[in-house]
Length: 281
Image (tube, rainbow, N blue to C red; front, side, top):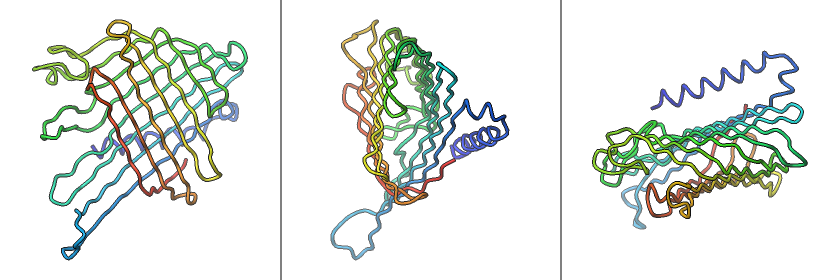
């Protein structure tokens, strides 16, 4: 697992280095920016502490890399995300707190004003094995894996505010067959290894700069499957608050809420807060 994360970091370093060797014309067309963050949390008690509590240690690794293209009336925005986190509570096994591998790509050609004809692609999966509360493996790398592709219209007011609507989105969910031996898994029916859906997708992005050193990023993705209970809309909302202390240190709050009744008929919530060391490239 560690080798996988390091491989992605090494790949992005090579991409960044090669970009510096391109011509001046290419540099004008492409805008590239990346950030690596390491977030740590620790709580410790000695044997004499009467207030109660359990010692624990947690760490999260995050990598965000944007590589965007603009020439004339054509734009092509890409975002690559890697996130992985572990926590160790005294007296128990190490458990996973975050695990994401995601690529978002959005191509647009200006139609009029702030509107663009668009085509988007999204891929997301995880890198490590996931366990339920009983210690049973319920997921691993590329299982599940989600793909979405669809044409539509993009409204882009600025780099900090945009909404893309795709009324004809194809979605593919892939899981390993051993997860569906005894029942459905992540919406894939028993005995199958994939599920195809066709529906409508809306994705929005809004970044608010509250102060010079505080920013709030909001991402909202909605999806309705025309082929099966279109009224049950899949929701994925992410909020990231970044409070910079200096160039290399910041406090981060990440909040994510997911509702997908094919996976579980309940709201999934993830929250991570801590002090982070950052490196931009």
